[in-house]
Length: 123
Image 1 (spheres, helix red, strand yellow):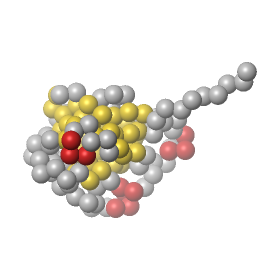
Image 2 (tube, helix red, strand yellow):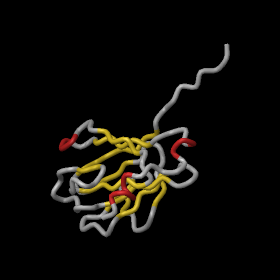
Image 3 (cartoon, one colour):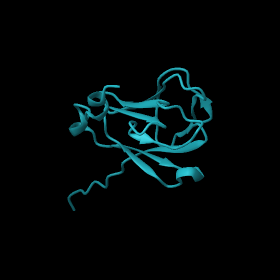
Image 4 (tube, one colour):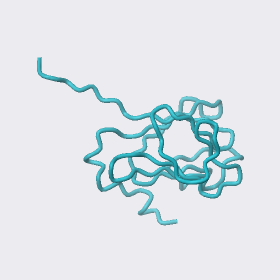
């Protein structure tokens, strides 16, 4: 596994208006949150993954979330045994994530959100 690739921030991170956020909603890691601001974020059981979850139904490297050059977030299953689901549908290819999407890996349920920034205008 190329750790440089996994920890490298996306070259356009400075241009992004929002970072992504995963929030765990299932009991195993309830309320645990993970900031998504790397070009590639891997989700799995391995401690080498940026999102490491101790769930026996999650593969060592289960899925990955990528940020593209436009700041869009995409999720892709990494040929996991128990698959990855977005909004209760098994994904078979890279899928774009939207605010509030439900992600299921193994027995772990998460929601995807964007960082929210209050824009202060001139009064």
